[in-house]
Image (cartoon, rainbow, N blue to C red):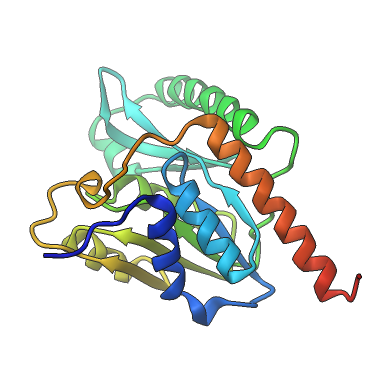
Length: 227
């Protein structure tokens, strides 16, 4: 029986220990999927001395069937569509635009809540580590990977503390590196592998991003010889 994590912070420290080969990489950046991925990403970023930011993804659902995604939008104005699904379901351009507009408004609202006035970190040419608190079906993470590729990072690593075995394996063909700290069987649900799986609040996300921005600035100053 796989051991449970105390909370997301402990999970992040365990995950960070598996990412030591990324430490001190000046091109490394940690992007966390909010909200639950942020405490995990905070510990990873701190251990690797890398910048931390959020990468928000909103699925574009089919009208009347929002759980069926025909595409996704991501932070930084990224939009990807499943062209096969759009054609097969005869989804009109007007319907796509209407759905995308609604989801873009929600994405922008969340970015203001989480990041405030700080601009998103530029990922072009960077080695990105995408972090969440776990993978069940992996659909949100998969949408994040597809959206992130549009921003041309040098490499993408998906890293999670716990995952369903199949979901972990399925990412091997889609990213440069996949790290799943634990793949318990039976898996059932992400929350079962945490003693404390309390929902992360918007305020906690803001505070963690602010703290991470502070230690990232301090590390940059140290690297440039500042006292």
